[in-house]
Length: 212
Image (cartoon, rainbow, N blue to C red; front, top):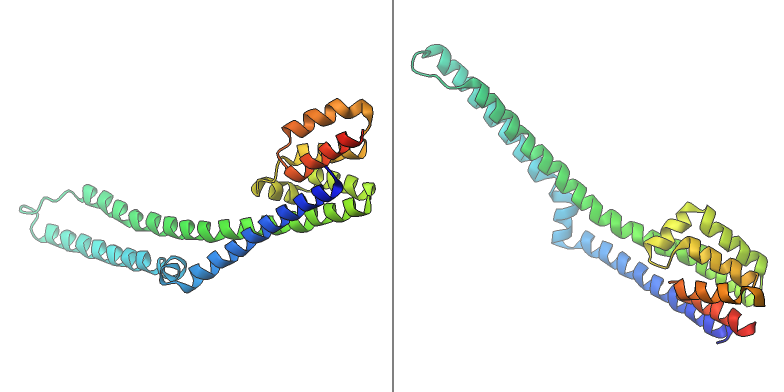
């Protein structure tokens, strides 16, 4: 195990995240260009709207017709107006709920892709690239700064979790152990490396153990 191995693992993680960014961008472009994407992003909102208008007009006209009929022929027409009113409310709200649901679902698809893309960029820019540079320069002050940012920067922490790069708190602890590595901490370093999900930091701790 060498530092080169650790740096290579960091580079692998960067490339994996860059691939996710490219896939996200491609997915968004396909959604914008394809007919199905246009229906999801643009047209779905218009159909429920027109349906809603049609049903409202139809129910109002029907209600007025029944009221007029009931006034002219009170003995023949005995239609329960209360039930008709409840039916009107039900039919009125069905398209509204559908309209809100379809728009929320469409927004959820595009927003989810955009969020994952943003998370990947954040992890690359604010963690992996600075970590690689700090390890290459043996800048332990910079490593400690990154450990702090994993705990204090909520945006970075969410991005790390969202991209499944590991537990931010555990990763921060691993960086602190690497900085303070000593024979007295060898068991703690070993146990932490076994629990750590982040591969670059796992290899970094294994490297620290090798040098003790």
